[in-house]
Image 1 (cartoon, rainbow, N blue to C red):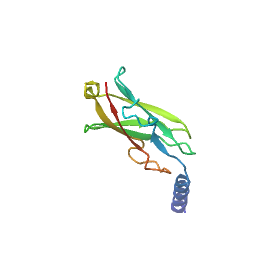
Image 2: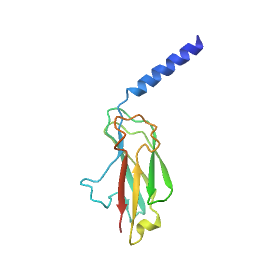
Image 3: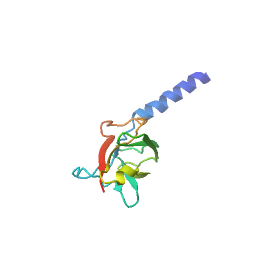
Image 4: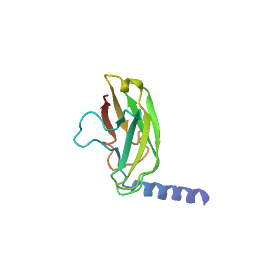
Length: 130
């Protein structure tokens, strides 16, 4: 009987998660100007806002940032309220501060752990130029 109750509870929890309406995405520049407002050269950081375009609170997630062909930077991201945003940041590598600048990719819910209404808007590509 205990085993049946456990499986029933598991199915109810999974069914509840399946009905969630979350949609995480990096907040992009209006008009897609190319050089990103996320680049804070004076602070030496990339400032990323993750928005939830959905109707339900999101769970904690992971934002992944990659500069050019460098290693991933994994940023723990707090839950995001519906139509709200949270901010995360990471240090800019030296090449972003040099004359040629750098390119980066930000992926909200980078491990795709959260069931979303739209998984196609999780990635933003931008560049930092001094």
